[in-house]
Length: 171
Length: 167
Image 1 (spheres, rainbow over the protein chains, first blue to last red):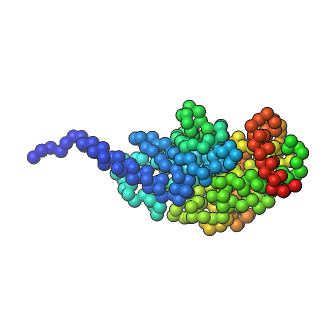
Image 2 (cartoon, chains in turn red, brown; image 1 turned 90 degrees about the vertical axis):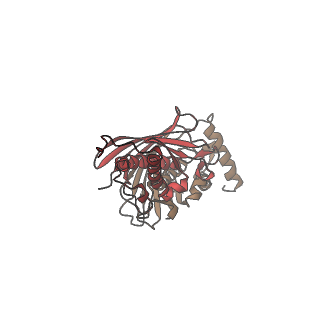
């Protein structure tokens, strides 16, 4: 009789990637407003980058033209909410406690609620794609504080940043 | 040059500007009132605005877009502010979820204007007007320097308004 292996073999990379991608697609694809704005999310390991491809309907100043300030607010808030949900579900997802295929429009257990959101407009939004990355600065049992940075052509030149507080869903 | 305009002309200009915004059209925003630094703007309920598919509650971002636009319009209609503006910062507090199926109405007041900054506050309501959905406070640019590009833009709008026969 062979003794049981001391260490579990690492899962095949395809399995790990598939599980994470399915979970992320559930978070992004399940929200109609995120789809309306055309927001996509790219993933590298656990790092997420939200992308807002430029579109005519996002224009707020037809003369410049510039992206609508409200769109920028919505984009940053969305990036913050997705990042926070993602951080919350990560452990359950990695441990296998959560089946990512169950995430979708009917089942979104990890959606936090925005308490407040404060946006700092640093440059006017050009008619180009925009990118955002959010960082969960502090996450408690009940409340979380998230900071978001957004840029367009140059990563070092932010066009907006924001801080938001969120109410975590009750378990 | 902006000083030569009457309050009516300026309000008309702000209205035209707001209604020409592609994103406002996409969200179905309607400017209901605009005068002397006060703006009322509404947005009908639509399934594409949903943020929580289980409840049908609209996304906070859509409420933010309405509040931002309404605040900007309030600034543009203020007698002391230039006719064009941009958001410097905006803080939004969410009091409760908007009731699914109901129209959202934003009311904004531009309560102070300096030579360079306009200060605004706003509230977003659904049909239960006694309980606000969200409030906002913001600072907007109010740069009346004729050398600035923003004024060139406002000149363009002025031309449009005069062609439109608002005077």
